[in-house]
Amino acid sequence: MLDHLFLRFIASLKTSLSSSMLERAGLEEQLHNDMMLGDLTFETSYSLPGEASPPHVRADLTVEWPTWSQGSYRSWSLGDGIEDPIEIVVEVALRFTGLSELPMTPQQLLTHLPRHSSQTIMNAPMELQRVTVETSYDITTDGSELSAEVVYETTCAFDEQIIEDDDRVQAAIAQLTGWISSVLVQASDIPLTYLQL
Image (tube, rainbow, N blue to C red):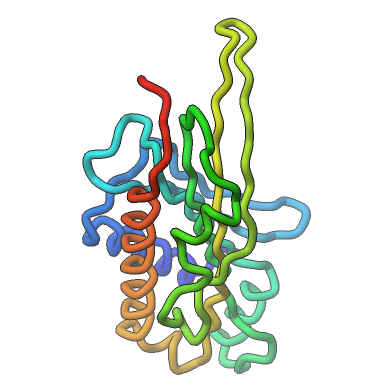
């Protein structure tokens, strides 16, 4: 069931990201439906204005609407109250692409980035989950390209008061997009070496 709470959340998120002066990073927005589990997932990417094309640093956002949250929301909308939590999971992956070298370890990379957001988003902070470093080797040019990814995640929990109060949802999303803008600036300032386009 495609519940309107999820669609409202996505629409508000996109509007807030644009209002924060961030730009779509050129990748197609996607809405996935897990046919086996029923989870819905929305994916999009944003970068700072004036970035290269494709951007060296971008934020890949994944918003997940789990099937049990859909069921809880449906029960609430039918007047049965909320038994199981209504949650939307938000993942923000900072992607560094086109690196010619990674002159620091993942631990050193993290000294330039926060371990968690300073503010909570619907009572929970964005928390650092993992760091990944990848090497791609091009056999036609005999060259290699590095990329790195730093992933954060939070779970937005909705009670009846929040569901019925669009202002609280908008305020939480504004905090989230403000944090994304801030962490993108920090990521762009990290002294990394990129391949020449």
